Image 1 (spheres, rainbow, N blue to C red):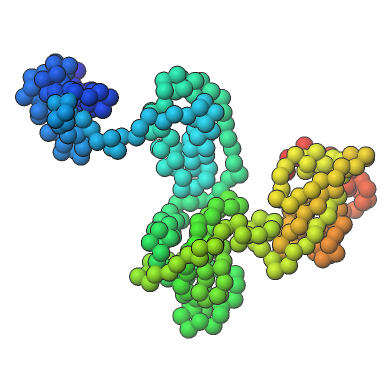
Image 2: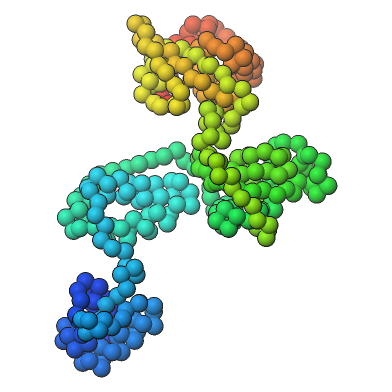
Length: 355
């Protein structure tokens, strides 16, 4: 074994000894490692130079490491350990949620501190677990934005921003003429939803709390201006009963009937925190929701094709009808098949879909 590797192995051995037990004197450590005391002291100097906080304990006349340097042994049950591994390695480590790769590195450290019996069992079970989330957008270009927002929240500093938005300009003199005016933003939280990261905070230009998608910032810079996050702010309260994350000004009671071919799939999924299901003898199902705004749920309804019918509110019925008619107009009239056969054909093709 090359000399460098021998020294590395010896340094690791010294660390293990003085972390795990008390009373290891220089002589005892030298004997344990098979070197002279003089060599042992040189090794200790190397540990000191890289920041290992060891010290000599006069009570035991031996070397020790400050207890806060290494993570203490973690006492987790098998279920707890497996859940952490699943979340941190399969979701964070693979960055299925972008910018969470650090979770994979963290769980590797935790695994190293688990009892050997749990480590062994984890190794056997872990390879038989797979988690696949919906694909998120590319995140290479948002890491700097993510870090800037994160630091601004931690330091409570206002951000100077420009945002690529579909909204019209407010006539701000700093506007670039494309509706992307400069504005100050006070971030309250980072939110991952609908396959993308958002900054939730107070938009000083709009004078309202907004959800801003990180990949649409075209300029973002921390300023020295301080701000405070309201004590009563919660992301859950901000989103309210929005279908996903766009909260409308009015609450609607929504009632939708799904045919028997989609009923089981619909019933098996928790779509919204207010949902209620009513099963019918013919195999169909009525789903009821209380939703703040219709902008998002209308597209969900349309994704179900002919397998559902909106019963109320009438505003949603009209919006679905208008968009469905616009779709038919875009594709033109299908000749020779008739309405009934068209529906049957659609059902045959979509029967195996999972929503």
